[in-house]
Image (cartoon, rainbow, N blue to C red; front, side, top):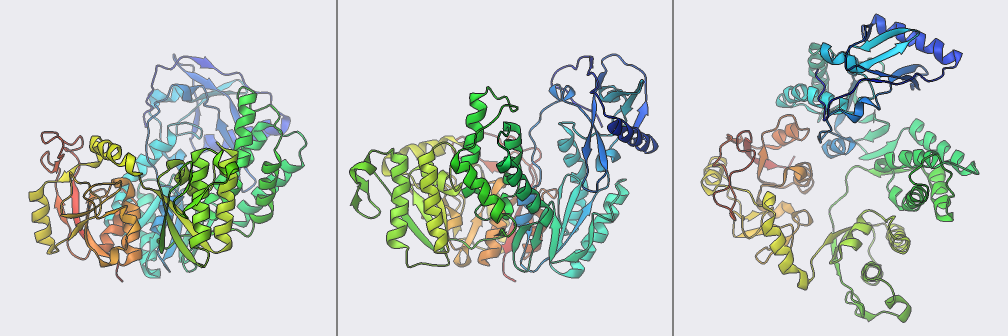
Length: 590
């Protein structure tokens, strides 16, 4: 494997840290192990070499891992944006009562050889001997991207066989609708990774399919459709919070470390963000006051102390749901400096002194209390013409405004006390609709459409006549009835995800980033319709989409005339040489 650089690297030597006798003994043992595995080798000096320091990190099993300090080298490596599967990717794959398994690739980075001419950048000195890494070391900034791309062909092979799987670096998640289907997934996956030279760690892998799986520090349950923290992860955060609360003079670094642990637990803690924004604000304030010196002390505000106590007291028993039903009710609110149009009332003199963002959020709260108090066990979609209010509600708070954060917490706690879940979406005010339309028309990335002839031939082959286009605008709608994602003069509705798809014969050419959400919506609504998808078998959603297909897909090969841009008829799609599409008739019905 080659290492790309943004700028030429320079010869560099990083002085070694002072070691304790114990650390030196551990390093001796680790170097002996790495030599026996041919992960490192003795070497001589080279022009342009970078000699880095080494340090130790504790492993979960009580052993140690020797890490190369690549801080200097990482300044020169190519920083390329890339997308990788995450826990959120996996959550969107999980179906009710499915079976799950996992494969942990043992010392996966050490299975990837570094190009000999690049090994000089991974030198270190120990007891007078110069060593170099022959394999991908931990700590290299470009390693996650390299390793993710390396596994893509393997995942593509498995996905084309119909196996649902995802990989987060060296941790592979496998899924099957039945026990036997998951067993087949495990068998084929082990064969594929073994053929590539990787080793499945028998102690850390879960080869036997189960409806309850421990993965990445979380417990996934497909029967209850819940996600929880492992006992180890939950108690670790609880201990960290208690230690921080007991420290009379914690550093910003200590504080930030605990905050990182809190954020990492969000997927399994339903109301976690409600008890986060004050501690995040304290951290940012302390960093600004101390010129971003993490080793300075921080004084915790009473609000931050209360939030840390909440985490310490509640993290053990917290959980979250893997999927949530769509909105059952919609509430549209609006506010001005004079009053709220949702309830028809005026502001009190003291309320009217607040910023319009606060008044919009207050209008939502008053509207919920006035119209939704009798409702329980329901999901309410809030339509608001203020983007700040939408963001504050969906994020369960903000660190930018204490008054908005406090009101948001009060609003959410009231809803949760009534067992009401809320989600907010933006709907432009009348004065902004024209500007929104102009903005939409200038955003060409959202306006590409299949040429009429290509779509007509595909629909004839599928023998399915759609009646509505779910992701369109007045410029690129394929059918008279269409749904837009922003206010549109000809749309029958805004935001396809707010509709019930079960009664629609739909056509959907969604933005690629929302494909997992589209597939989930089709499953949840037990809907049937035509979807245009990129032919990307490396993606985690690909096998799921293929399983939902009710007939043979229509493949549209890459061609410069495949896609059309209504506002610029002579334009050519930037990916026209490699973008192959599938027109699929998908169904979420059992």
